[in-house]
View 1 (spheres, one colour):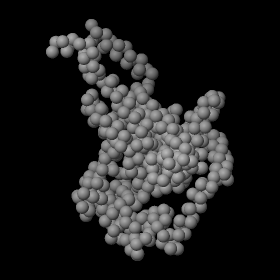
View 2 (cartoon, rainbow, N blue to C red; view 1 turned 90 degrees about the vertical axis):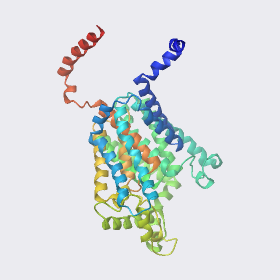
View 3 (tube, one colour; view 1 turned 180 degrees about the horizontal axis):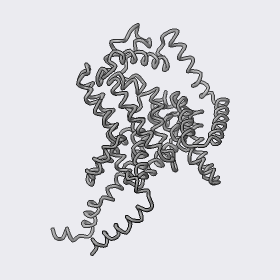
View 4 (cartoon, rainbow, N blue to C red; view 1 turned 30 degrees about the vertical axis):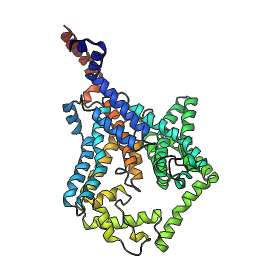
Length: 445
């Protein structure tokens, strides 16, 4: 026993095990690994995210965490999860369906922990850089698979569309988010006359846009990306800069439209799909969404206060299915492809209020400061806009993009904004420094 204690290697490892900074670094590394693997794998994201949350435990400051949980930005996602859990009590669905419907909301519990951790960490930006680099690596893979579909890990029908892993919706969300998030650093570098770094980031951003234009893009990204860019400009940029971005975006859009049959086909399918749905009831992508939304509004009207309960959506659509099989009106789903309606059907007005409170609080906090090297608020805004057409908070891939992005960004902003308003007062800081130094020397003596 004495020999083991005297072994310098064992003693060093024991000190490392008891070192809080080592655990903080471990959590940072695992968060970076989550960001790196998010565009590529579902199982690795699950493994690294669980490991990240577990690694926060050994030296967790419970009192500080409880204070952090009292913040509205942390309380809102917890409230939405608890509502999903309590909503199982008045649902008519089978208990298996109820509990299965709770699990997508469970990832929201990671948000308060990420706020807490990255308020104390110095590596928040590294998480965003890792995600950006991983998505940038996906760009050449998408082009390679577009020309050589056999190299894809997906079935041949999807590989022909330039998808190496996952699906074109996930890939489009990633690329659109990265392209918009790079807008701010490019503009700041140009204003600082750092031309070459600005051109490099501009080339990376254009590579995302070009891949969406010429290889594959989802219609959700096509609609929401201009909205995200416009909101970003209104929040952070001057009108002259916004005008310059608008003109540049218009030129890029015209060039892409003129030279990309893929983009032209994607845009023309909007009108075609709507016409097929209205005239023949064919379940096209747009037609299905319109049908789901109309029925969901009717379900919400039937139980407007607390909804029909967790996991009730599929059963309601089964009862509302009409017409012969193969028509849009006969489709049965458990997800109305709209985050607000998904919440409203299950938990009524109460759920919608909690959802929008969470979005509003996070948007206010994360957007309170300038974006810095990257637009850290882009992930939260992207989730809000894409949730008009999908239930992205409850989806695995887009849900973890949202949780990781907002959680890290929120922690970074809270770290930069002291909770004590006097902390930013130079006079207070001058008085505090000698006192802290005296206390330190007192302990040393």
